Image 1 (tube, helix red, strand yellow):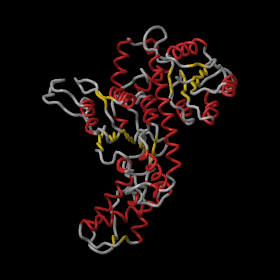
Image 2 (image 1 turned 90 degrees about the horizontal axis):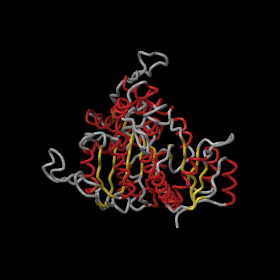
Image 3 (image 1 turned 30 degrees about the horizontal axis):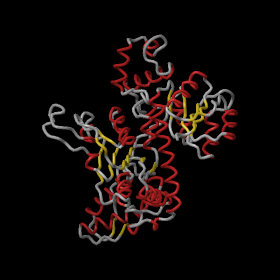
Length: 460
């Protein structure tokens, strides 16, 4: 039997349309709540399995005020809103929803998001059970390698170690966030190597390095003759990773049209090679990015539904400048590695060098530190490293100095202006009151500019 849904929505027409969609799909529907108080009464008397929660309700209190109460009762919920601006999204995201539907709703989007939320809730319950099992790094098989090959003593690193344990014991998608050079690939490999899939391949794909015109073929493969230049059949990365793990690095760079295909892989566990037929795959997905995906969503460059499908188990890596306790352990570890590789008997760093290393902000993070240690070992002729060559950092731009501040390009300004206009008219492009009319341009011209600038409404 399908779940019981509570709709919290103060607009009668939209609430009634949602109710019809849900009942038509076999869901049981509680009486519609139009305000915070009505919703609370229903939660106390007729506990639902899932809540569709409008952000802006009748009365002073909003859906965001109601969200913590729903969360306390361990009920998954999805936000409903006509307002998808970045500020609203940030406030809503802090309450940990299972999804976000933007008005006006399409039936297939509503049902797809309900499936996602149901699956996410089941995965979160499973992860919660796993997290109770692993309390320290020694609980995991093969943990004799220390912090999964990561040197350091900071509390942040200990937290990451425990998250790797939990992720390795589960099958959920993982999203690794962090600046360039913080070790996202190392974490992904640690999760794979300590998982039940460890004897199967882990396939690395740098989404930023693959041409947008080739990435579909790269990921899903193609049949011979499916397009000009396809002289042979190609097996894509997903098939190469069968029964193993695929690591999609820099997923924030993935084109929107490929994001929709990736969403299908996550939901349906199937791929479709270019020019071929659909086929099932058994692959665990780990993704990573150094971009702020919330900003990418607000700008229309990343799908909100894909974000939620990947954001099952996020792991955020702090920059090295925020975990100074790890700097010297990392430096000493790689000093030993590179000294051994180059047959040098270097035993450590002088005190002045240690002070320099600890005081530097490391904009390139761990990767920059490792590269510096390797170079320093090669240049060292004694038993101690007495000098390191660090780049001189330019001072931060002074606020108000327009010569130093980054200037938006014409394309960035145009994209922001179009997005603001679309938000004002609820993403209506054509007709009276639409964005084209407000901008005083032909609707086909506006559509062309939206495509060129990568503007696409979520779920659409």
